[in-house]
Amino acid sequence: MADGSVYRADLRSGRGEIFSPGPGTPALGLKTDRHGRLFVAGGTGGDVRVLDTRTGRTLASYRVTTGPAFVNDVILTEDAAWFTDSTNPVLYKLPLHAGRLPEAAVRIPLTGALTYGEGFNANGITATPDGRGFLVVQSNTGGLFRVEESGVTHRVDLHGESLLDGDGLLLRGRTLFAVQNRSNTVAVVRLNAAGTEGRVVRRVTDPRFDVPATVAEFGSRLYLPNARFRFTTPPTPPTPDMRYDAVAIPIPTG
Figure 1: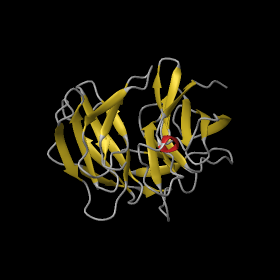
Figure 2 (figure 1 turned 60 degrees about the horizontal axis):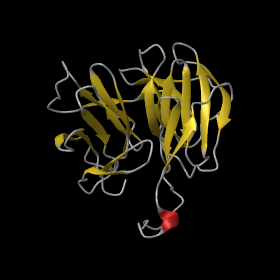
Figure 3 (figure 1 turned 90 degrees about the horizontal axis):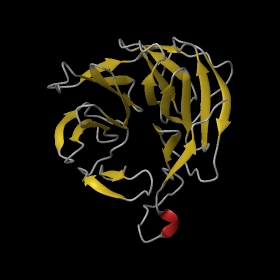
């Protein structure tokens, strides 16, 4: 988040290195595609970037807004990359015709049930189980929304539950894993096929969690990087208790 650099690590040992130095503005949500490209949400930089996963070289950069922004997370579909903005009620779309990168991003206004307020709004994004829309969590309210490609939003019925502090989302079949960062929790949500209704069947925590911000899956484990937002001063590498880590946990069942 500090300067947009991207670090590549070995999941077994944690050893790694920065393979793509940042431009001085943030790098947040990350997704790779089968063409060896990494799509990067640019946070307060108001941009999205596409990197070569082999060389770290920037293949393309898109300025998606000129005002205040927090371009937060990204999901890839067969024909586009979609980005959330926690400050502005829009999705940014990069059309990928036959896999080719576009000249410019498309701005899709969000309408319907999802309304923005103070703080962080739309954050994590993933597909619905039927693959026909998206699920987006609103951090400051705990709401979960189904979002159509048109930008129309519908509140997901969670039967009185909340995903407050919701951050990264991961869909596995009809099970949604929703990271609640400051709560140091992963909520396990069972969804219907359309992603219009869900029930929180359990919540998982771990003493090693220190404000986990997102989640990825590999093998039989979930991997969660600790963002450590509790710090109010910039971390310094020589200080052991201010170093960063990721936590691996077994994929929850329930």
